[in-house]
Image 1: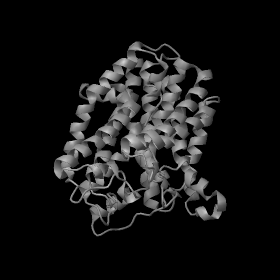
Image 2: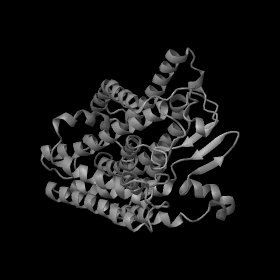
Image 3: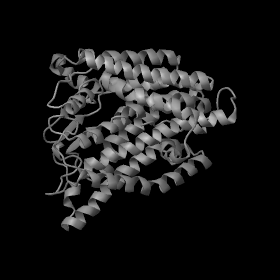
Image 4: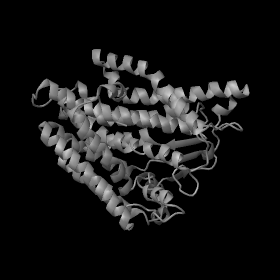
Length: 407
């Protein structure tokens, strides 16, 4: 998720025409808003779908379930990319001198928000810390802290650093954490998801840092293209997106490097295609990032020219990313509480998450709903949250209180 200030509030370094400036900044907000809407689908499925089933495993999934999960893969890489891009754009308002402190303090705030506040008040509704997952906001926080160092230098340096991490981190796949002895937990934090502490209280790294930091740094370098003239910018974004997609197809077909798990022939052509698309998110492999960032870049190129009228409501979500994120997590869990009370006459389940396989809460017997119902809940949730997000976006546009930039 992009947690830097919405770029629509930042004046350009050079004064292009007002219409051009608005259009290209809206393209960033639009893409961010769309992937945030899609993200909510996955989280609704987490709360109302069946646990214990890997939705992208061709051996156990169905085609609708696979693509319900697969489409949400676009979200996290786009969030991290646009976090870096928006950091570059926000320098126009804050200036380069003020960015390191802002990024570092905001990163620390996101870490605390993810590991403590949202964990207790959003995801799990309890304060026992039996299960703590270090997930997206935690990784975004560290990515912003790392970026606070690179904003002192040329964006090209950040881009080279980011590309190196993205392309090279799969070289670490065959290394076991035990090879690092006492430093094994550090390897889990940086590269391989796993258990940091347990079993009485589980502390689990779900978002290892190296590739996500790389995507954010690359996004910061990408911000430079928004200083270019429109034709050059759109051409670059389009070619970069096409190059990423074709690189994914070629490397995945070769089946040698770029993902720790190879694709294989399945019992049908459709499921073979699912195996081909089933790349690794935890941590995001090179192929996973090529597969997801390619379409994101293509969309930026298309939206840069013109934002269709029917898509404009998504811009509202894109302008208040953290507010929407926190609100939608609390809303989904609260809805689960209401449904639990209506169906079972009791709500103790929604406050219990004693083991990782019962995250984010202990599901009552017969709890999961069908996939069409999951989609219906998702659509209703997004519609219901839009007025609050519109109100908060308007508040941020009217006022410049310092705390608004942290929510």
